[in-house]
Length: 280
Image 1: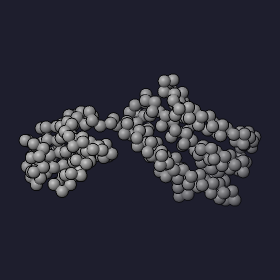
Image 2: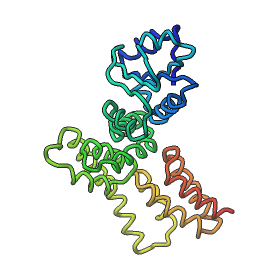
Image 3: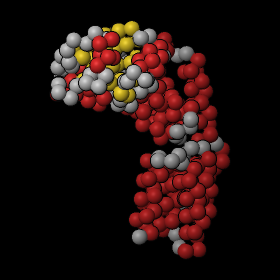
Image 4: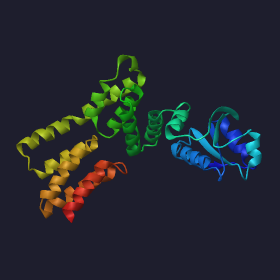
């Protein structure tokens, strides 16, 4: 919330409303309903500052501003765009009426999450991107634009099978250039995941499953093609079962794979817990 005064009125109310919506909530301490509306609006708009600014006017100390707006009673809130009234609320409001009012003017929650996911992806923040786009997909799992971003996240986190399955649900009308680019990425990921080197190592391990060197080589290959969970599973097994002479190298490889994962990745937390339990 930004408290409006005569000093910042021009910047907060006039200039700010040229680039995004500004909701001005008028309140006074002696009118509890107006304080309640102000606080409810603040709670509802938390995290939405990119789309709307909540400005508050204390009618006791800023009566001149209230007069300029022609405020006759409290609680009142006025929505502005380009310094002009666009909509408003008057009188006590429950949560449903506030949500309905804001819903007419704000982007849907899934659109906000989609925007957050795209921004996180462009900054290479995969965990944040995955959290945001997964929530958006839970809200609306039919939208192609949400699916395409989720597919991209799947590919960047090594979930090629999930990416391919979701790609198959994109309807022909939505198969644009972004879709075609992801098709190509899936094909490349599948080729990398099943490279001749990996296939050869997997075949050798079928005849010599306890060969530590082969296991370590395969884990390294898996890690290089984004199959980190399979790599960590192999290396953890080696750390768990190996003797002191072979355990150290497996542990080093295990930690290297963990370090390569994005900060905050659930997979990293899962295997760090496993390693911790093993050590202590």
